[in-house]
Image (cartoon, rainbow, N blue to C red; front, side, top):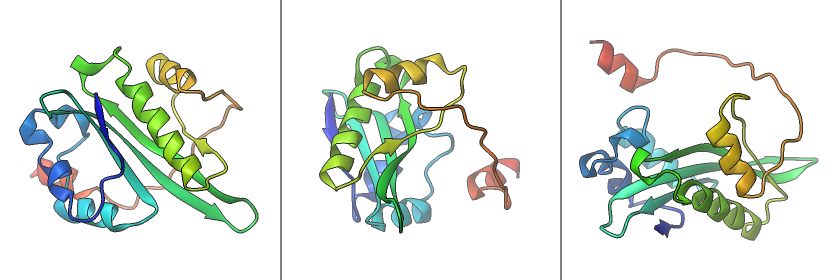
Length: 155
């Protein structure tokens, strides 16, 4: 597995082209060009891809730095995705460890992630990469419309 540490501006095609390389299952929906450009242009948003020896994307992890006046900056592990065929081979763990190392090198004081209590595979991956459970939380969210990709599928 080869990791691409932090895709940046100008590398949108790596993300947008991933489904054409057979990696559609990595994303919930096809990547949107404008959202991809905006994500990669933001210096506190990070996207690391894993590739198989043939150069096919087999996983990614995304992280977002969050800064608060009295806490400093930490890394929120936003999403981890590994292709079904690449699971149980250390790909997910490698991506999480790479994001953690990247966060530490950027001066983040820690990293955190949310997952469901019953998501055994995710919990195992995060724990093997050095995370530990710290508490039980209830996630509350707001919805302000439907993401454009889901709107398009409804038509």
